[in-house]
Amino acid sequence: EAEVAQSPRYKITEKSQAVAFWCDPISGHATLYWYRQILGQGPELLVQFQDESVVDDSQLPKDRFSAERLKGVDSTLKIQPAELGDSAMYLCASSPPIAGDLNEQFFGPGTRLTVL
Amino acid sequence: AQSVTQLGSHVSVSEGALVLLRCNYSSSVPPYLFWYVQYPNQGLQLLLKYTTGATLVKGINGFEAEFKKSETSFHLTKPSAHMSDAAEYFCAVKSGGGADGLTFGKGTHLIIQP
Image (cartoon, rainbow over all chains, first blue to last red; front, side):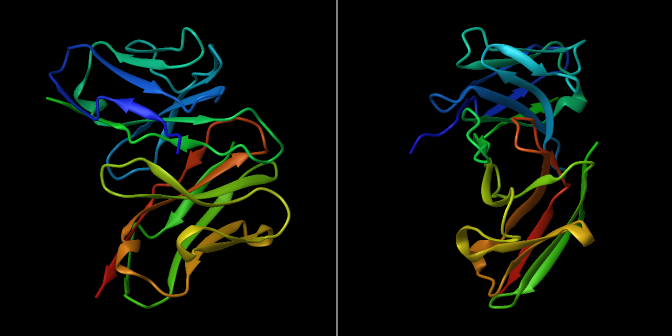
């Protein structure tokens, strides 16, 4: 069964360092999402891609966060510099081209970031 | 704008008892509603969803939910709890059938007592 892949699964870094997370969506899924989940809360959307284009990045802290999906397939989320408050689970999800109501989002296992 | 409220950050039930997790939503347009489950250090797995049509939806692992427009609710139920149901449950809303991102509630931690 096809799955969304993310790496690394765990990342520990010191504040002010740069970190990057990678996501490979399910093959053929045009839409890709990055969510941030702070401990004890629900996921919050950071950025949404349609193919290689950003559709929604209104909640992305653009002074330190960046995201790209250059060829419309896999994606990288970067934080530079990392701050203590960035400690969270970063989840990637993808969904297939819209077909009626069947626009389910499939989530990867996430990357748990700890900033010391 | 849309939002989700999950009543009760923790719910504890005995094994074999009824599970009821509450979710209320706010949406300016007809909503699409979802329930996801998350096990420790894992991603989210879709339990069930309401898009259009029948208001009582059945999902995986014996869970079901009923969309009640008049109450703006989408509560999750399971007749008989199993130890393996212990996890974090999230209700989410999306406005319409497009590819927009989901708005999640804060989650409910379900505890199953033997």
